[in-house]
Length: 174
Image 1 (tube, rainbow, N blue to C red):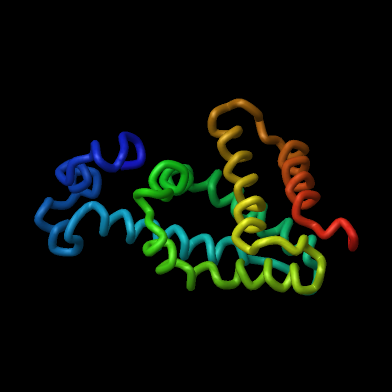
Image 2: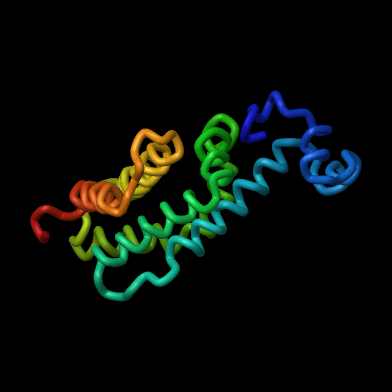
């Protein structure tokens, strides 16, 4: 589905790649949309766990750095998850309703940003905007690496991270 698109992928191909009979898929899922929703939910659950792994306490900058690097490493280690999010995990395929169902998996990430805004460590902007701007840079950095446009060596990763931090930090505090 990721390689050729959702609508161009027949259920017979999904079954073949999963090494199961088409009937088996229909036993668990009504249609491709349900499969996509389940994959999206699983990836969001991974995000919620992976991004918060080894995040230190009481230092917003260090916390953000670890979260950013965790997501970047997740995408580099899971290129199909990256491609899914980039090509399938967007409207109109992933609706606001489906996105809302995955919110519980991402609550700790939202809480981090909200706490950072309230403590005035982060810019006082719309929560959705700051999250999107923060992790959109991870997607851009991953895309550069996968398309071989940049090596994304340690220095380039640190540059991307610093530029992202500079865009979300409260300039009056840092």
